[in-house]
Amino acid sequence: MELFEKTLNSKEIYDGRVIKVTVDEIELENGHKSTREVVGHPGGVCIAALTKDDELLFVRQFRYPYKEVVLELPAGKLEKGQNPLENGKRELEEETGAIGSGYCSLGKLYPSPGYCQEIIHLYFCRVEKFANANPDEDEFLKVEKIPLDTAVEMVLNNQIPDAKSQTAILKTAMLKKLGRI
Image (cartoon, rainbow, N blue to C red):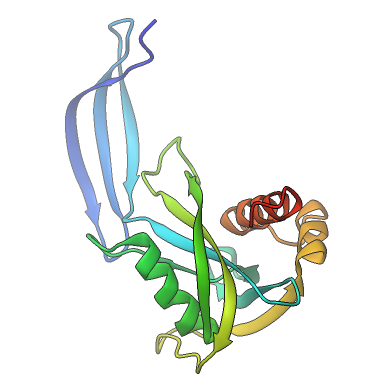
């Protein structure tokens, strides 16, 4: 068993500002044909920024697809060719005013591998100091500090439904417990 699907044909059906959608005809490993709908996305970055008081920085913002305010770690969309870490540093400062140090990778996250190509790069840093936040003109945020232990409890109690934030919070807590950050 090879666990492989061969693309026979790909038809772009939408090319927007953020996503691209294709319908692909594929051949399965048993020779049968099928189709796959694929959402292309340039990817993103998420930063777990921990203060000297062991508080994580969060932003609350209205997320249109869910029609609700969502609590998330600072994050942003990548543009083609952007370096994820440099983009994450910029997003952290723009959204929260925080300047971090000691950045380390928490890995990458595939939010919906069944139909989407998006990869979110996760990072940890320590907050060194604060400057002025400067969110994008169409970005309206409320910044919050939440103790790391409280954030873990919030994830476990389904109070933080955002997948990238859940993953980065839990990885940060475990790495801190193991003395690796």
